Length: 75
Image 1: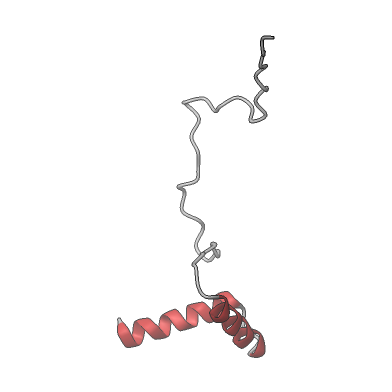
Image 2: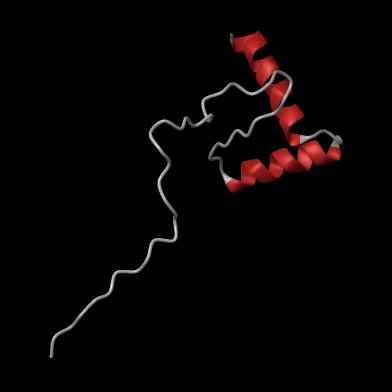
């Protein structure tokens, strides 16, 4: 018996035209926060979040303060 396979229709839609540009390289407006992901140990993440929460500081602000301190002392 012959096996016939029917190709599944694409759910992605039509590809963009070559003339369309993607604006993913545009610089975000000044003053806006952007995502920053790093891989760290779970214990470090927990300790960082506990410290930030205990001092009522957002994680991003604490990271910026740590980074500024590091640059001043190791720059």
